[in-house]
Length: 113
Length: 112
Image (tube, rainbow over all chains, first blue to last red):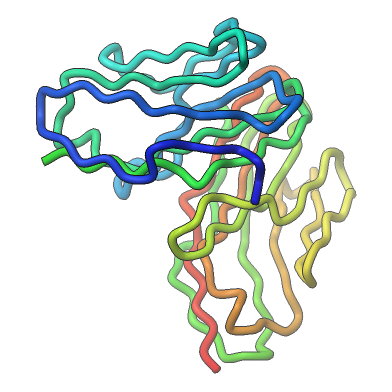
């Protein structure tokens, strides 16, 4: 158990809908990262927050947004969903950033029908 | 930009065989290198890491050495078990860009 908790484990929804994925980092970790794993794109970095502030942005679509709350949990919001958004979404956390190890949650599997 | 290229799979081996998965990288600066493993239906777990040139990471019988001259971080295990069946990802984290950049993953299946 990595100590990173993601909910829900599975999510099935329809095109055009909006969903929220939740991540609770390990106790004491200030950084949260979101990654998307899909068959065609592999594992791709989406966005990072550190202590409530956005720190780095990757290949995140404009339809997607995220935030980190004062209690350090994070949410990834996906809107106007398309079939191609179906993927496994991972959250990871680390103490800080840079050479700190990132610990991954078990992921949320999103299926857009 | 940063990128990681790892050996295409899938790889199928018999128990007690030798495993090697090649990984090469392109990065600016001085990256840290990682191997993560994903068992069926689970998230990614850190297998081993190396933070500077010539460092050797090791864990659970797996080893990888950070080779700056060949920009490589190949994963090896001398005698695999059925329980080593998983997808293995090579990754790097650069000092300027703290995200992890992953290779495509290599699926390893070990037969009894």
